[in-house]
Amino acid sequence: MSDRARVLLLSPPFVPEYMRNARCDFVSLSASQWYPILLGWCGAYIEGLGHEVRLIDAPAAGMDHEATRDAVRRFRPDLLVVYTGRLSELNDVGIADAIVEELKCDAVLVGPYVAIDPEGALRSARAVDKAVAGEFEPAVAGLLAGTPVADVPGLVRREGDGFVRNAARAPLTGAELDAIPFVSGFLGRQLDLGWYRTPSELYPYMDVMTGRGCAWGRCTYCLWVHTWVKGPTYNVRSIDNVVEEFRCIARDLPRVRSVMIQDDTFTGERAHEFSEALLRSGTRIPWSCYARADLRPEALAAMKRAGCRNLHVGYESGDPEVLRRIHKGLTVERMTRFTADAKRAGLRIHGDFAIGFPGETVESARATIRWARALDPETAQFQLMIPFPGTRYHDEMRDAGWLNAAGEPDMPAFTNEQIRAVAKEAYRSFYLTPRYAWRCVTHPREHLLGRMKTFRRAIAAMFWKRW
Image (cartoon, rainbow, N blue to C red):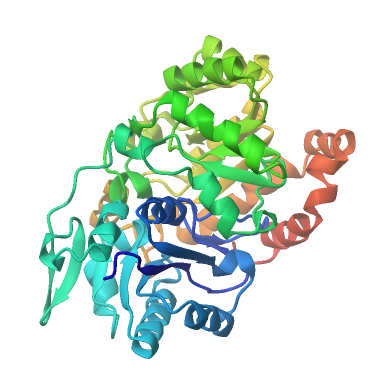
């Protein structure tokens, strides 16, 4: 390709309210949309190499298939980079095929979902013949530089009637991440901030990442840990680099009212160091992060002083045997103590719980619900577990014969219908209570007035629609 290629990064259209940019893809009841953070990183990376880049996030923009095709035609890319979803993969591959056949451009499929089975995705394609397993910036840069396809790291390609996997590249180091222009600046130029919202963040907000991978990295069920940056790996940017990005957001994106740090888990030591550095910088902007439920009180207090408002915490289950089986590495007692410490520090918590783990029963799932109510986070979700192929959780469920024809959890002691029924019960038990009603009364703008659309959808899902 030329020294200055035209590159189009595409999150394809699918169905209304579809969100593929999180750690699992779904049609959002809360009308949430997260930024296409991984596509954004890729865009900032290759724009920094001198290429002309356009990012289209069709679901967030409300673009249908024809509007998306028209936008791509106008840009006429040399390379099309398509971020696929789990639910939308056939749709995404079909869109990429049609664009390649019409415009005769090159194309590559990327993202954690395609990394589950890149050969399978390519097998369903007519014209697209390349995909990437893992981090995809170096592979995309290699294609743009004209590197022979056999030498592009992480590339999976069709060759004759079969497929070839190139050798993987080591994950990008902290120094390499520091060298990439700030993703917030790229997203701010490419997208309308008004498209993105999530109930835990002030609106409008911005996503950033201070590092890649998960320092724990042993949980059996996590998509990104098994497909993007694998295992207990946490490659981090320098604290000074992250603080500078916060300073630039405050200066250059004045509409942004809060920042969500999308690291898999913002570890206690790093969170403490970052908080102290942010305080020294004088930058004042609210922020939130994912946190493992073992942060110490000193770190939590420093985070609060530095403007942290909300922690997204993966509690998963209140059953000690389930926690052991999924390699969570934390006990119910430790997570309960952490929650009390976080509340004393004045931090809000969004609790992530899940239903459908191996060996779980109706009663153990109800124990999780009771524990969630006792912890009393500001908000909570009760995720139906998704057995992503390639994860240890999926393999354990498959080997035990605990997956139904749709690949969903379905166990003799906890059937798929029971799992769905208990999930509905969990939401009713947490939200349809005097305690939550009081929150709506005392903070109506935050808990009620801005969420009427969510409540209308959620009530139907909690009672009569299939979950």
